[in-house]
Image: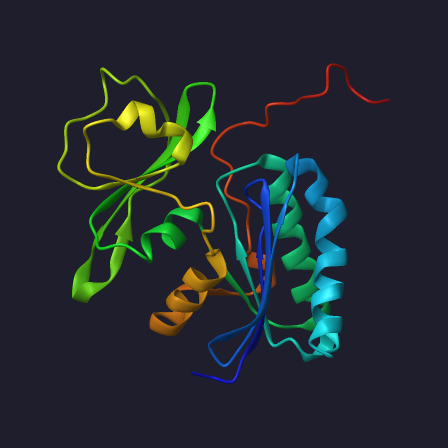
Length: 221
């Protein structure tokens, strides 16, 4: 693997993840709980600065960034993606872009069906399957209504948010762990298929599957 020094960002959930890796190994990592995704914008930059300071590195020492594009919190996704784009543009380095389904499936055998709690009785859903020559293919992620009486019968193992456990009783499921480390999954995918995820900063996009839950009631003049 190329001797890359990568800053990893995941701001899609209430847990803010920041990590620094070099040559395929995690050097430093931080997982910061937050009462609201809206605070990620206030916490992310100081967390990055503290990590670089601890590593005795300048921001110019970074050779790439890695970011989870979603789905998840609208505000959280925007914070992570904009930060990654801005830093990569300034540093003129590439970005490894992943979605949450790819990261979660990286630690499981395929096929696997993933359901992420989208609140209000809904979930973000995608199925990861084996593609040509052992690659992984993913159906287009969707927003589904969670009706326990209407969930499709399937022997495909499910990876689900812990808050959905009651709905999936009796099915083969894996709960997403509270100590889930997306940076580890990012490194795994970079090692095995780097070109599939490597992007120019201008091609990095947030993955929004639904509209934000908070909207302006009137136009600003």
